[in-house]
Structures are given as C-alpha cells and as structure tokens.
Length: 371
Image (cartoon, rainbow, N blue to C red):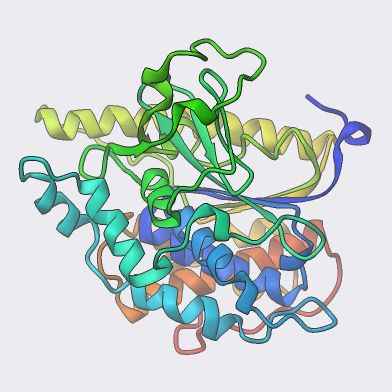
C-alpha cells in the first residue's frame, strides 16, 4: 500500500451504496462536514449506488451553494437537503420494475427518467464543477457487465481499465447516476452509448480497439464491484473519509430455496465479503498511520469513539436503523429524520475523535427526530 509520504495532499470522501437509506444517511454526513467547513476542501467525492444520488445532487447544485469565509454553505438545507428529502418520498424502483417488464423498456432507463425529471434536469457530466481549489472532483462508480471491471464516470473522463478511457464524456448526469444505482435485476442493466472513436488507450488495456466494448457500455450497480466506493481514493490521498450506509448480511436459520431469493442472497453474500475486505484494509491503514482519516457506518457503535461529548449514545433504536430497507421507495418523515440525524451524529463523533479533535458537538439537523 502507498506510504503516507507518497500520497497526494488533500482529502477524499467515499459515499457507499444502499438505496434511499444510503442517500439519507450520507445527507446527514455531508450536513456535518459542511458545518466543519470541509466540503469545499475536499479533493474528490466518490460514490456508489444510493450514495451517487446524494453526490449527484451535491455536484449538480454546487454552484448554488453560498460558502462563507469559513467554508460553510449557509444554504445547504435549502439547496441540498430539501430537494433530496422530497425525492426520497417518491417511488422509483417500483415504477422502474413494472415498466421494465414491458418489451423494449429498461428499468434503468425509467430510473434515469425519474432522476432527470426530479433532480438533475438535462445536466450532463460536463456541467459538473471544475475540480480545483473551490470544488472537488466527483466520480460515480458503475460496474461493467462486459468486462467485470469498475467503471469511473466524471467530468474529466469515463474509464474502464480493460477497455480504455473516454475523455470529457458528454453523458447525462441522470444516466450516470442511474448506472451507478442500477441494482440488479430490477434496475439493471443501464446501457450507455458512446463514440468509439473518441476513446484513448490505457496501460493494461485488454480490449482497446474493439468497438463492441466502446460503442455500447452495459452497466450495473457500482456496488457489485466496490460498495464502499473506495477504489479511487484509499491508496491515493493523505486523508480518507468513508461514510458507509451498508449493513452486514442478516443471519438466516432457514434460507429459502426459491430461486429469486437465493440469487439475491448469494449476490448479497458476495458483496458483503468484498465490502468486509476493503473495510479491514482501510482500518488497518489508519492504524498503521499509512493515511489519516476516519470511517463511520450505519452499524457503527457511537460509544466506541470514546467521545464524552458525542451527540447521542447507542440504543436499541439506533441499532435498528441498519435494518431499514435499501429500496428506492417512499421514506416517511420519521425514517428520513432518523437516518439523517444518525449519519450526522456519527460523522460528528468520528471527525471530532480522529480528524478534528476538540470542538463542540453539532445540533440535530432534523430536531423533530432526535436520537
């Protein structure tokens, strides 16, 4: 693994997958990071699946955020939180699943149309902010069903290391987020067409020159490859922050033999193993001081931070939040408020314990649902 001295100065933030549960949990995390004055100091924001919904909205509305001299966007609630919460009251996966049963209709395309209609409009990846001192680079992950590799999508490039790189992709932001959140089988696959003549070769490319892999990208959920979204940052930046809304695989004493359930169970098992390995490597890097940073997850015990001024304590109720569904279906005000507040409280504790020692605890972003 890269040593601390050879890493790039700066901070990378990864937002995991997990449907609307993840989108809302990460909203709470971003809320607290904004209050710390860290949003504009991020070097890159990487995201997967449900995390890409939140990251996509942050990227889309970045130019509207009014940052003060301390780097705090005073209008975060209005510009980011309000529209995301409104979107999380809508049916996305059900509508996409039903439409996807029709001949010639893709569930992923329906999801993209919902993102386009309610969040991103006609914005493309080229409308995202330029990465630099005033804005992070945004990277959305999908997984290629053609090569099995992770696919990175951003303003600067789209890349699959087995296929090559497409500079400055003119792809709709809604399509990129739909690809990142194309959870199989209902919302998958997402097909994106590109000009094969605009691709460039990369070191290690296996199929560069074959237009079949460059003209039509067949993509599924980014979490199939890496549900933490760590690939671009965990071996690169001096400071790594990870917000994880994923939960461990549930225990089943009598697993069903129904093929649909069994397929989903095996898929979740494989994803859980990959996630656990990446998390172990990340925590080991922190402990060896290979890099700075911190990890917080929906299953984290806030008491474990050993912070006397943590905003709350572990309770059976906070432990139950990890069991909230990961669907793209309507979330109640209670579910939304608790997930946002839990992400906020864990970010507050993790950052004040490991990255920004000292300081006062924050205040609940949704005071109607304190934990």
